[in-house]
Length: 341
Ligand code: RAM
Image 1 (cartoon, helix red, strand yellow):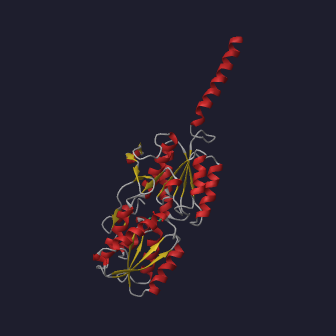
Image 2 (cartoon, protein in one colour):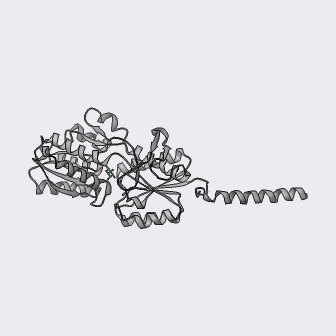
Image 3 (cartoon, helix red, strand yellow):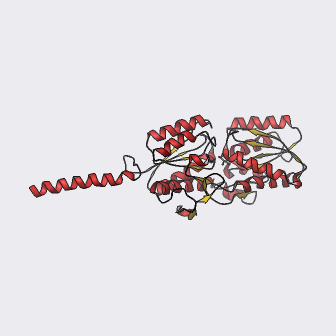
């Protein structure tokens, strides 16, 4: 009997010891799974849904619990509220698609001070607010390519406008900077950028901003929309108003939303990357940060499931993980891709 009691005591001590050893390990939910959150810009965006789906696929493959959140409107204040809630829930990681480059800094620093691993994807936060950024493609290539494309579509002449997401969206703002730099080249001297309008990644606002552009600039030749919500809204307006061929629409579009407009010629061609892959890569990066396999330093390497191995590189402001090159979608390949994303 005495021997039995001692064994029980020993077991309890062992359990206490193991629990203490585990205190640096990921905080786990009641079911023992690490909790990984992703926060998109706003609800109701099919691109965002695909990005979050990719994140969830990665986290679930890795045995974790994925928490998918987004405010109704693309505001920084509402993202701060969500981050505060996630801190209270004691999640292990937060991956954010930011509505503002600097505005989330206090909330994200608070999360990091509590040991939560923080990263951004798609739309970055500043380098002090996160451990690493998951970038879909080189911003310079994204910006310059859109100007090359629109120039080819309008034979290098005429007025163009940009229809963006929100005025604070860091991904779109960076791409627009590169578009403006590309426009400085002498070969674009006959192209005039008349306005950058903001549809806030809301369908109705993007439609009304497109209509306002057409009204204010009757000679407008093209709209470049570096947002999947904006390009779909602009192409719909051009189609509904019977302006196909008079005003071209290009930019970054989701194949499933744009197939009809590529087929009817409103958009001769456009670009994007796979949003499922952006989310999936961020899911793997979240897991690797929580497991301590990477710290977010340049040179760190990790495995991203079916995407293979990635290395963290030095970015403009903080470190990043680059997914790859954007794809071009046109009449030749849109049928195939519209089923996928
Ligand atoms: C919209 C969002 C997203 C951006 C794409 C291209 O869906 O603004 O952040 O990456 O467009």
